[in-house]
Image (cartoon, rainbow, N blue to C red):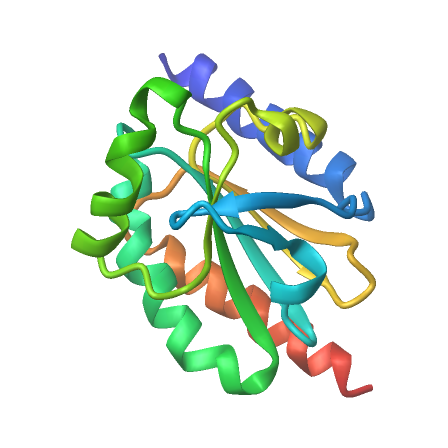
Amino acid sequence: MQKRLIWTVLFAGIFSIAMAGIKIPAFSLQDINNKTRHYKDIKGEKLTIIDFWATWCKPCVRAIPKLSEIYHAYKQKGVSVLGISVDSPRNAAKIKPFVKIHRMDYPVLKDPQGEISTRLNVTVYPTLFIVNSANQIVYTHYGFRSGDEKILIKEIEGLLGNAHE
């Protein structure tokens, strides 16, 4: 069991490094009201946190309130949070009520065919990318456990500090 955990952590670390510098492609998806939204119109001025999640994902549900807190704490500093639901078309009717119940007041888009998640090789949920103003992935985080929000805040603070240099 411990060997498996070590390999999982090692693989995630290597994959995170491999994702660094990858550019987020221009894309558009529908929001929860079925309005087409373009990434360029909702991304943050300095950083964008993109969270790939699903209604059936328990760690995703635990991450959402923390992402909402981060959104409110950093939106005035040029940081945006964007949730992308990877729920299948069969679960599409669950997304809007889920967003309301969990008070996700940051933009939420739907990727039911896996168009964007596949292009970015997202296979673990939640997967969170921090993207800089040049649309490059500068940090990747997989899963969510209690305390992970502190890691994210530390990354955000460090990246914002670097943005002023």
